[in-house]
Length: 128
Image 1: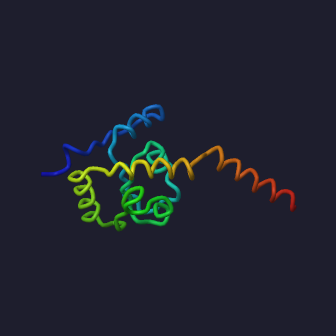
Image 2: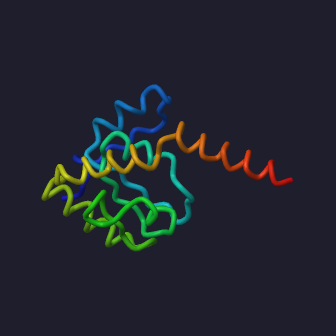
Image 3: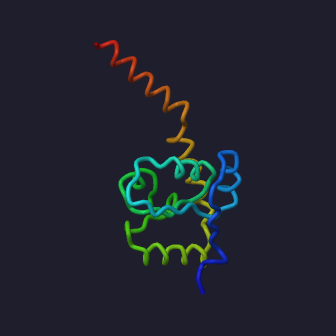
């Protein structure tokens, strides 16, 4: 018995489709081997989705196991599968969804981050 009846691979989606897709999911999953700050991870967190992501530096900046989701050893398909099975069997603790959303609100605010970047540029230009 696999996860086929519980996992959906949707293929291409437009930007307009994304909020609905994230909201319909239970968990965001990414097995990326390298990533900076993943935009799709931030989008999922903003939609209140806990994340199951590979334990790489970019993901560790966002996810603490048991707080906003789970990390699995990069490249370890068995650990990924075991955690997916655990999530399917146990469900998602609502607090993880709340924590995911709060993290996105605190750290993935594009307007505030852009303004911080502009402030840094202005400061740098003043010293030239």
